[in-house]
Image 1 (cartoon, rainbow, N blue to C red):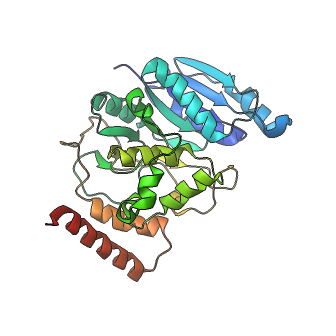
Image 2 (image 1 turned 60 degrees about the vertical axis):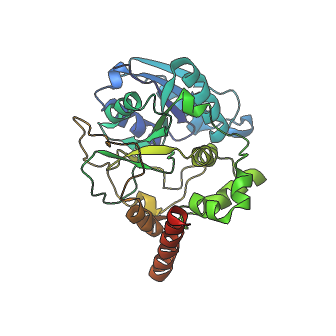
Length: 312
């Protein structure tokens, strides 16, 4: 198997970075994988002891086929750094596995990501491979499923997909002028991604992830998710620049024991048949709705879906 390079983005969290590296090293494919580390610099060129600690630590990392370190001379910020780093590595290797410094991965993470990248490399309908899965029970026989949204917590993609990235978010106008399309973009009310898109355009946030999701959505593409999560976010402790605390998404303490030996992929590239149930459960994770509001939104979603599929 031609293994994908891993690109890790770090900043000023030495303890988180060490845990992330240790988890990656526990993967049997780590010693055969190249690791690129992009280390951002402190803001306003100020001396930041934590930034220096991170940079000191990453120079001692071993356990990988090769470690390449790129130290930013200025503070790039996460979005700009990710877009630049992923673009450079993916242009050379054709595909990439992307990590941030607050993610803990399963020992099966690299095996799943590389196998999935090989499996769907030529399938243009598939835009991304996700290592994270929401804390849901998915009753399927396969080890993975397709969902209509991208992920930013431990993911992988190909050059053919990354080249589609709409940095200027031109698809925003379609959402703005089409309420039904906008509702679907918001996972039928489960998560207000459109407001995040508006914040991006207004300069209130700088997110590569919302723009990549918009790209996938406009392209009607799918992301492959594992049935159980192979990644958890360890950064909901107030230490991150963009992180929150007490997130419902971090409601479990450890990476899943989900063991992938021989991976059973979906037979067809299509939206998981349990999407309606998954979407309803995402209300509990993303939205602060009452049960009645969730049921009401779900019923509206079903009516719209039936109308869309069977309208005369």
